[in-house]
Amino acid sequence: MMQVKLTVNGEQRSDDVEPRLLLVHYLREVCGLRAANVGCDTTSCGACTVLLNGESVKSCTVLAAQADGQQVVTAEGLADAGELHPVQQAFRSEHGLQCGFCTPGMVMAAVSLLQENPNPTEDEVREGLEGNLCRCTGYHNIIRAVLAAAQPCEESGGSSPGPGTANGQAEVTA
Amino acid sequence: MIPARFDYVAADSAAHAIDLLGQHGDDAKVLAGGHSLLPMMKLRLAAPAVLIDIGRAADLSGISVDGDELVIGATTRHADLAASELVRADAPLLAHAASLVGDPQIRHRGTIGGSLAHADPAADLPMALVVLGGSVELTGQDGTRQVTADDFFTGFFETALADDELLTAVRVPRRPGVPWGYQKFVRRANDWAIVGAAAINGRIALANMASTPLRARAAEQAIEGGATPAEAAELAADGTSPGEDIHADREFRQHLARVLTRRALEQLS
Image (cartoon, rainbow over all chains, first blue to last red; front, side, top):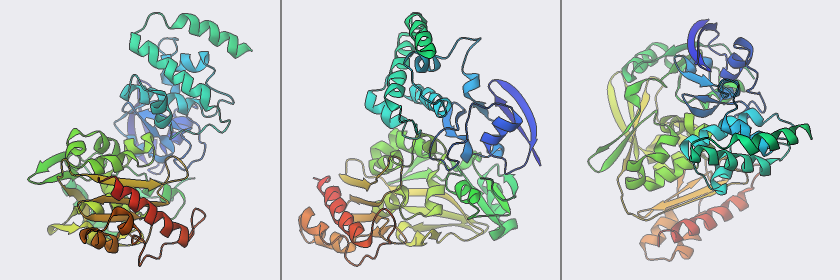
């Protein structure tokens, strides 16, 4: 066993772990954060995507030990005081999901993509999400959601929650 | 999938990692980004007793200029290589190759040294190093030796790296403004090349046409003798005996090598 100290969703933690513990299992089983899913378990599908020091990584292919001293953000850590992150809001309003299994990973990959490229073209969004698979094949609305999320980032806030919230609630209950 | 048990040591510098390699020898594997090693450990294709993590050794990462070469620290990540203004200006083929490795998440973790030491003949960076005529610095207790790309890759996932040596840096010639070509044939986004071809400065290299990245020497000689890209590319698969898998049989790989070499050569003009 070894001790790791991580900041997970802003909270400083210290845990004893086996060196072979994967970050995704650390997050799910030690921290109790279940947003990051184990999908393919082979670095292909992206369902386990989280932010490590602000950048998207596949947590099935990172040891908790490698994240010692680093910052991790999962989908649970995106909302700010109950207010959804613009990417979460956009996935809701654009119905960027079907079964939902890939969604936390898609959202985290999109957050990282928009940090690196705040105003991407549709092609850049498609390329930027090449590490995330949706087996419902619901890519169309996922791409729309990421493009929609890029707008409020660009306009630096204010008007985005209005129509998004209304559409989102209609679609979620539909 | 869970890797077999191992002891984990984080090296805080290159010298520390080399000391640890001296202690543990072939019981140890070096962990950088882990995006080749950890999948193999999860499949139990690799089960090292000790992992020496160089991911946070600050002196192993970074890109600098040394005369007419770029020197790239072993733990420089693909994303940083692809985004580096220096690399994009002086070795754009390398920046392009790095931008094609895996997907964004993989490029945030994977490192140039890790990819080269792993020596997958289908991978982007080994072919890029061979076509650029680059070299690697291998450092052990007795100092550093420099090995050219042509000599570094010795077999399928095998290199000239000794058990107690660390790949510390990569050197590539600076070639600002020199035309280059790069072709990679894949069936899926983020996959390894079924076949790859790259060309610059009279050199042509192929990926996944042998157990190591390969020079297409017959085609290189034809170009030197004044052949057109199409004529030279006809010779690209000469003497090759590529493996077969679900993606391609031998004949199809040889066909791809000719087509991709022609396209890479046509990119030069």
